[in-house]
Image (tube, rainbow over all chains, first blue to last red):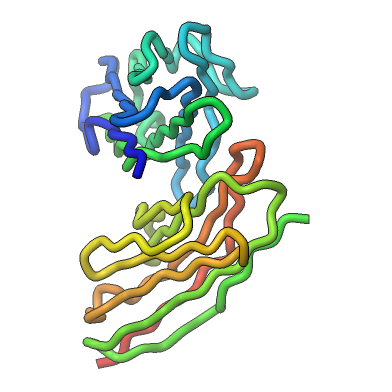
Amino acid sequence: GAVVSQHPSWVICKSGTSVKIECRSLDFQATTMFWYRQFPKQSLMLMATSNEGSKATYEQGVEKDKFLINHASLTLSTLTVTSAHPEDSSFYICSAREREAEAFFGQGTRLTVV
Amino acid sequence: GQNIDQPTEMTATEGAIVQINCTYQTSGFNGLFWYQQHAGEAPTFLSYNVLDGLEEKGRFSSFLSRSKGYSYLLLKELQMKDSASYLCAVIDSNYQLIWGAGTKLIIKP
């Protein structure tokens, strides 16, 4: 079946640094990718939707300058958490779909900012 | 409305097998998650199904039937550390996550 690979699966970084998370579709063209964040003891929250070659559409309350999303190719999208702070520590997960087909999820990235 | 049902609590014996069921009625369907949550901790991702069938990962397996709005999580060779809450969650047509209330699994020696 279709596979979405997310890397890294976990990362620890120092406060003030930036962290990049990659999301790759391995055997299909991801025309649309979604980025989610999970808050402790709460639901996954949709952060943004990106279509290949276009700027991402961010959900209300998500800082686009803080969470940079790049979807430059049909198989790769990246989420960069800029100037990370401890409150950015969370579980980030991506999903991807080809046109109107089902979306497939990556395994997620656990980010810890110290 | 959107609704996800799973049993409130289940009890099983160490070394045995347990199946936790989840039924859903949501506005659209774009996949189903199973999470494990130990008391006081954040949920941990276990599995994701979007196509019908069984996905196996070691001692844990997850099954989905989209036509029946039904999924189950199967845990084999139960260990005491498997005592936790297991949450079923569905991605709806707006790509938002809809959560079930969770099933508390108690493992007895």
